[in-house]
Image 1 (cartoon, protein in one colour):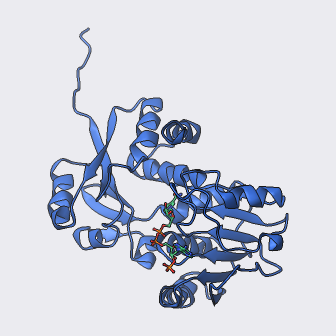
Image 2 (cartoon, protein in one colour):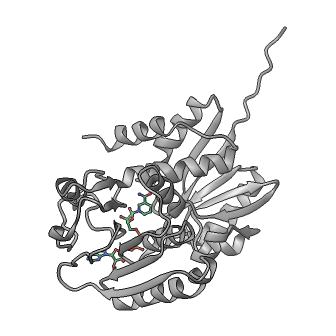
Length: 291
Ligand code: NDP
């Protein structure tokens, strides 16, 4: 019997500007191959003015979904048909999913963080220091609170941004998390001393990102205790100075590559309904981040 031929691949991708250095394709396409799926992940440069046409294009081409990165995470919302709970709380979307023809905005950054954290410990009832108040911090704070974290100490250099996030966390987020959340904001001056009783310390700033790989997060590392989990969002290089320092203090560590892979896993699950192999995805990224 003749073999059935099908040259029509399923499409997903990433909209960003600039986007050429975004490595997501290097972890998603190997995962598709490993799953036996004839899908493509396209890295697409979309200028801000072209975003409405690009979303219309995704509908016209029948994309199964797409990631959004800088500068589209907020702007895309008005072009979508609905939002998931955490994307709604954050006011930002990084993963759009085509559900029966409706484009629904989700946010997988914080979900990826929670899933890498759960491999080590249970977030429930924990006390977390969150360094930074940008998009990554917002995503991690929202999902960790929804996953049961009890206390968040938010530390940020610019007070305006810190206070804005503090207001979101102690308002809408606290309500969604059942009213049990305790929030502090601490302006970041000098080396931050991690308070006694902290369970989790997260660097959600961009300090340490390539090419400033040796940049130091202003933190008194003598205040890190072996029972703490220390996480760094920086994916490149994954072995940041903070990651190294935390290991020497005996802490359990989550690196930024773990979080990046975990959010990619959730994206693939949303798009395909199947679970990919995270090890294949991590080695795809390690290949491109390698020396
Ligand atoms: P934003 O630009 O939104 O926020 C950056 C944050 O870092 C701000 O709070 C800023 O403070 C702080 N910051 C930057 N430089 C310094 C400094 N020298 N001293 C003190 N604070 C500083 O970025 P995002 O939140 O979107 O991204 C942050 C990092 O997270 C990026 O490196 C990105 O690569 C990474 N990321 C990783 C993901 C993963 O899956 N691993 C997912 C998403 C992001 P201020 O407000 O004072 O300027």
